[in-house]
Length: 303
Image 1 (cartoon, helix red, strand yellow):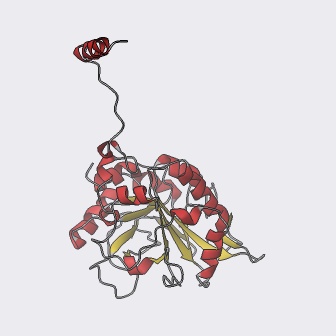
Image 2 (image 1 turned 135 degrees about the vertical axis):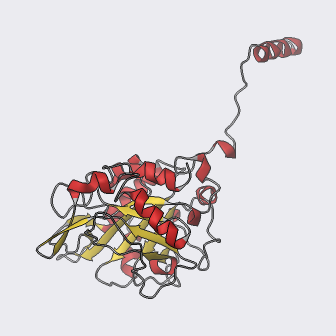
Image 3 (image 1 turned 30 degrees about the horizontal axis):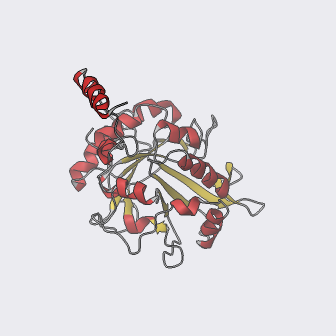
């Protein structure tokens, strides 16, 4: 085809209102499902999280109804879980005690997360893993080492980050460091810089709440902490006290996890915002399939 004809047909296409395809720009990218999140610092975003994410089922001790993979598929990007060693000495995801609930090895849980990250390149996921037995932090590193390739995803800052020092989601995604890991005790970033100390970065509100109105947002952990310079995590999980045993209240989860209304996510977020003059970074929930957690997350983030 002659040069003249090439230009003729290109002009005809444009005059017909057709557009020439272009490669996606940075502005087209969605980070954690939303273009609006891409250029916000990690510390400027609010996440709804799955409390005790591996403990799935219909029994009294279970906190979730769908698997970890399904939680991620639904849009949850913050997963919390407890660890203990079981009677066979396996470092496992266990609820309070491995005799009560053993959801498999920590490495198996991490493999699930890694496999999901492999297939979702524009997503940033956070893990908050509790060290129920107060084990040396090397146990956690060993579990990560058992999952080939997962450490390539982990974010390891060179120094402790202030609220304004965190990278944006776009920067995390571009670097490939899309997995942020917090541990609640025994962290030692001199040895393992990707295993971040939760309470150096967050304060938490009380857990095991039995008041369905969630009437407070005080600092519970770490003891004596200041809110200044820390992100914060709200435990918006309702429990029922049965003979001194606190169990997740499955039957009120639709109201607890509602976006608005008395006792809802939105109501507690508004209370916390009135105290600290910023919205929570994390709201942990049981039964994330109940209510409308992701609508609440979008609202917290101004969408």
